[in-house]
Image (cartoon, rainbow, N blue to C red; front, side, top):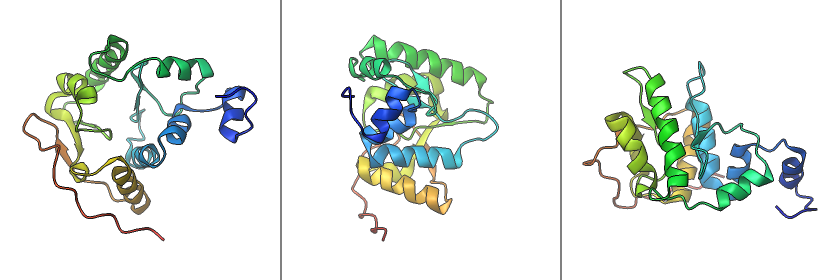
Length: 181
């Protein structure tokens, strides 16, 4: 973000060619890279079906070109279900998405299921059609990122469970992932 920075991403931001997915992957590291690789690998190719939850703009495609002003806008808002600047756009986009879904379709949340910041908004719209990878239970961000990168590379989709009030979202930490050499 520093004016005059020479890092490749900084140059692309200045040139107006940096995408939301690339920026979030840079800022979040392994966890977001895993989400993006996994979602891209298993997304419905017939229509846009991969979205990033943003602090102020609801659901956006990862290929959205971003600006310095948009990053500043995102940085000024707390991602909390109590902050209307976050909640209102996410709720509107979730309702729009839900209205376009076929009755048999589901939403797979690749974000944290242990906190209310996503669930309070999304579960109210999608109900039991909101699901998540069951292997997320007990894993931290980096472990989930590694798990998704491996699943994407192997072409093996994870098993999903519906996110309901009764669904266990916290649990015992699973064994560490085997290092990839």
